Length: 474
Ligand SMILES: *Cc1c(COP(=O)(O)O)cnc(C)c1O
Image (cartoon, rainbow, N blue to C red; front, side, top):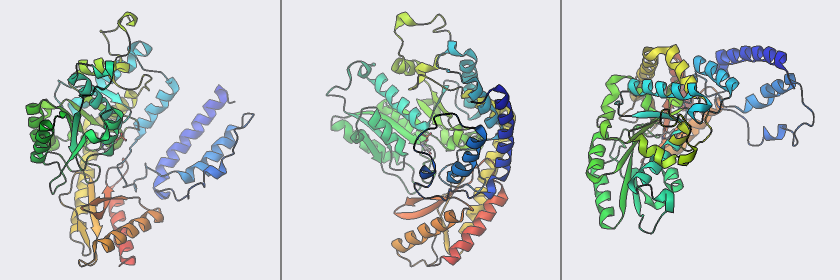
């Protein structure tokens, strides 16, 4: 076992490794090139009886583990959505793991609770949410959406399902668009509504929810004896970053007295730029809102910012302490244990604080703006490139496109060509991108949002895509 002296020495060595890694990560194959079982087979079946030297452990990390890692911090990473970190965030994570505090209630680390409150107020103001919202850090957007569904359920039933469980007449309905993230369906299942309680409402050509279709679904459900409970709006769907029209949804929710939850997991960060705040017109009527600084705001996973208007309903839903066990500070301070699913909580506000202070709000804005600019430039290039088509409308920092060398190709040919192109690109290790389907057609997605991406990386990626497409011509 290493002691304090060794710890100091290795920590310095590791920090050098970390800096070298981040400086040179763009040269590594972005997507791990190993095959299934390759890493598993290299790890002994039994743990060591006696401790092993740290040198050996570290060597194995480099030799066995690293080849099996996909490099999310590579500037050539364009897949899924980004899971960004940044230098200030990593520094803060080092401190957080050293303190290793359990920040479940105020008394177990007052600074963690009070910094969380303050930094989430900063964040709320940075993205233009009104002051009626209060924030709390959740582990993921999936959890935040589950929390929203449970709170909506409890508030609607005067906190009765928490007491008695579901009764025969609890035929709730929850609505989202057919393009909404799978975490909503998962949340609906976990909250006990049953998968069939989720109504996926049809979308328009831009893949945003159709408000008229939503009204129709709600009215039909009411006449069939169901209880409409909640609408989940997507600000930036996962497939194409389509934006649901918030104001019409807010009006519908007001009319039918429904909880309105906004899932802005990736795109929420863009609201630091005031010109994008048209997306949250109607926000005063929203009940809860989640976005992930751990996606686009340069803060290590996990850090999901959940904002809610009725914090009393939230706490009544999750509170676990009986009255007689309440601490002396209860009511005067925030005990975040009661603001979500987890009891134990990491000190996650620290990294957010470091990031916001190191970048400054303007620094974050500049980076986000650059990403959008480079995505637009790339979109224009794709639009004017013969054999390629751009998916319109293009949203924010995502570019959706497909290779279509011959307009007469059948959908099957187009899909096969694009899957082959993607595979070849990802196997090259030089870039990593993923796909979605739009109206049945395979569509490639490039997310231009990595912390260290530059215009040159985007342009090099486009050059590679064009050249590779020519080689795979159908
Ligand atoms: C990524 C994403 C999620 C899930 O986020 P987690 O934090 O991983 O749970 C949910 N909704 C949307 C729109 C997303 O893009």
